[in-house]
Length: 259
Image 1 (spheres, rainbow, N blue to C red):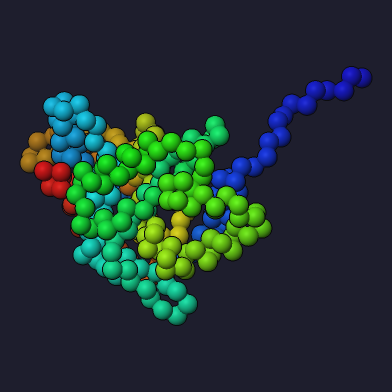
Image 2 (tube, one colour; image 1 turned 180 degrees about the horizontal axis):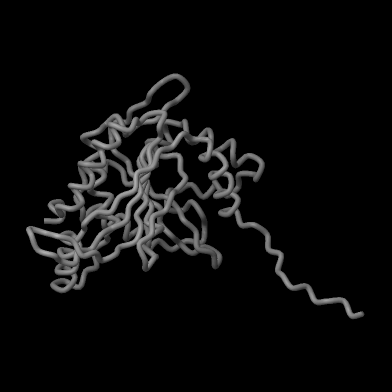
């Protein structure tokens, strides 16, 4: 009998895949609680659409969520923190880590950028920082933060490096302990994601769907954003998380930061 042709490909794992596997292995050890919600974003979306029609500028919904998050975290400083050994480290400035999808060597790669002092920045400032990062041209992982050396870390040290970085004050100041990922915005149906990550507060933006709801005694179609908020339960209990979520949801719904 003729030997059958090999019906598969064998490809080496990229450094990015190895880093994701190592990070997932470390962060699954965390005590995380999740909150799932739908937020009426009709008003902010209306402003974004009207701005585009007037100016041709496409404003980022992710930047809007980041701006709202920074303003609310500023009023809940206890969440802008992490545990190092037997100490609770609370950061003065709100740095928000935002995952940016880039293409490196033909592979779609998520890379974080830190939005520093986000609590004092306007929506347009944060929008421009994210836009600039997305337009950044480099074939080297880590170039957004000037840490291209990260790709030289040996495979067997990746988990140890991630564990050390998670408790390192310099890394916390560079990337923050509050994070946003917009992975779910690529979905066309109502979708929530349960993420993994080392942040004390991690916001995962899901998809947008239309829902008919009652508003002022009348039914209307409104746009709703699926959103997951994840908290490090070693730091954040249910009641503080609920209070934070109430304020965060109301801030997003109102659209006042855009106006």
